[in-house]
Image (cartoon, rainbow over all chains, first blue to last red; front, side, top):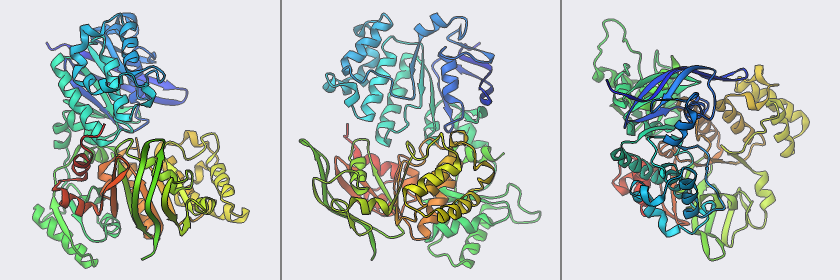
Length: 312
Length: 242
């Protein structure tokens, strides 16, 4: 039987009238990169705080690395690394001092675990005497990751590491996470960026305290059932508005194109082939005076799936 | 063509550090202009100069035909500003926020009342008019913030990471509002870390180390860099950055 590194069963938490997390359950296997994907207010941070023993749940049970998050909180804290969403380092300490401080708190020595962070720390070494507060966003994030890893945790919690960080630094950060798998550290990471879902082994899509779906990123996109097309013309503003008026259709901006999702079941007797649908869309746009029309069939992304699930 | 923003060799130095290094570009009326760059590339400093909050070290810039250096107060009156971090007062109600911003921009009492009614209806916020903004879902707050930034009918609105942390559906609804405003002739200057949003812009500039390294339509830029999407363009340009 595979052992769960993180086990969450029916966890709930309310703040006054606001139900932040509602009977959420999921399991994360050892060594997995598991993503909690959802917008602000989905309950991601509340879950992180419960799983890191910083907040008591109202109901349900959860364990991390076999330890109960309520009963065994002292032992638990030794085994986990936590990088909260807001910058958590000491701004007035240097890069090196921050790292030393976090190692000390956990009774660890930098040299014992240096191998684990070396890839990341070498990029910070030229700035080791700089105050943490004076680092760029990407560098702060790397230092925070080093500090969360320096006691060699079994499970790593990363709460929105990519928020406010530019795409280049975000990509480098994900490359680092993937390298950490060699150290067999389980990683629970949250993000509001849908494209980051594809970098996780499995994900839970969250919205308003509930899980909409749990699967591999491929499984999530495979379960998207409606015909989906990428459409563009010279006047995108008008195109989106006009395509929305089609029966059973939804249309929204998606990069260079707009994505048009059609009703799942075409009228009885109608030609159901994508080619027929595409020429129908093209004819509709020509009728409305569009120029430079392009219509292509596309595979759904995690973002398309999320939009679809939100509407149900 | 009617330019709402012009900059010529606009620069800002802090000591020996060139935060913004001689940038020159124009933004046309009704254009959605994406202002991109890595963290620390100089976007925020440039935006502060264009909104009259920081004076340039050298070079020139005009916004709505006013000089940002000599006439910053005139500039401020003709622009709207909204960011994810700061926009509305959470301890005020929806109605109070609208009234507050209307007052700040010197609208007449009768105008504020009329605009409040319009806005509440358009955003379908009538039932929530007297609720504190803190209790509204983020997506609603964002739409309200954008509408409030348009209250005094500015010619240009600066949107600084307006959709950070917002769900994908609400993010699209927010872009519907941006498109609509542009359609009505408002110029929009947008910063974002979502590269798919860069594609929604008419033109995009990418800053690297204080300089504008590329400026074009998303389509031409992808062609020039042989890239599949803007994410790839961005990575190619900003590679080697700390």
